[in-house]
Structures are given as C-alpha cells and as structure tokens.
Length: 93
Picture 1 (cartoon, rainbow, N blue to C red):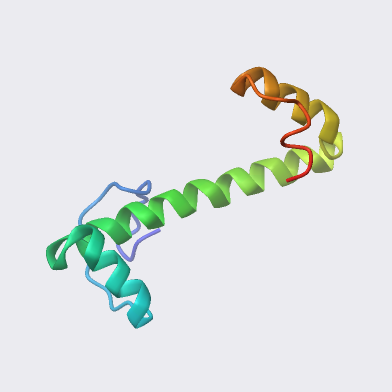
Picture 2: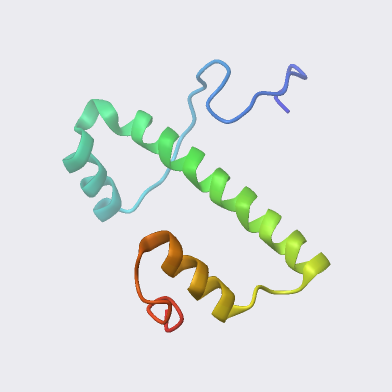
C-alpha cells in the first residue's frame, strides 16, 4: 500500500523516484543492453519479473504444504511431453 492508501499492482500507478545501489559490473551490463536512458525501464521490468517469481514460489510452497512435494519422475515425464525431449533429461537437473 502506498502512503496515500491506494493499492497498485506491479507495473501500475504513477512513477516514483528512488535511489538504487548496484555493483559497477551489473550497472555496466544493464547499460550495454539498454543504454543510459533505458536503465529505469529495465529495472522496472526486472522487478516485475522477480515479483512474479516470488509469487509463484509462494504458490508452489503452499501447494506443497497441502499436497506434498511433486514426484520428480512425474515432473520429468510431463516436461518430456511438453518439450518433446527425453523424460530423463530434466531429472538430473
């Protein structure tokens, strides 16, 4: 929730400036990809992706609490069906 009591979803609402500290190597890599003027947009998208990943991790953890962890062999078989690959390929990873 923001200071004015309004909730926004990631990517929505007005822009707000903050100070962010990055290592020189990370900042250099970002600037090489998007230039000096694209850093904020790049970081916005990266933050949105991380929020999506965090939400998915929480969803999986909740599912595992209720149903137990996924069977690795079943996951490998489904991965093989989706990717057309060997069902053992994902089992080692």
